[in-house]
Image (cartoon, rainbow, N blue to C red; front, side):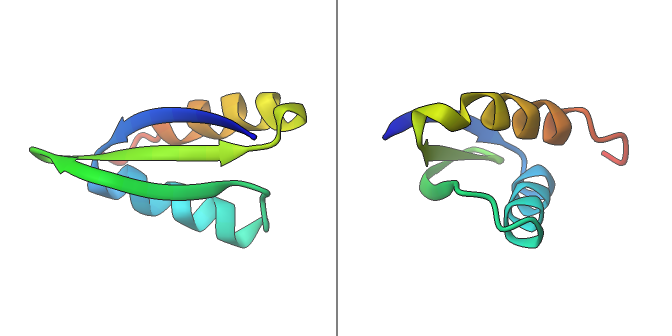
Length: 66
């Protein structure tokens, strides 16, 4: 298993959860702690899903409604 740590605003965190849930993606999300207004997350995934992780982070970070 591979891991990647990211920090997201609460709205982006909710969007990430929605995408993972709606598409049944093979990603385990653990909230490590809240850092001010950001949620520190650890994403766990299989090495073969590296491109999927890149895609989902890119998608969530580029949402226009914030």
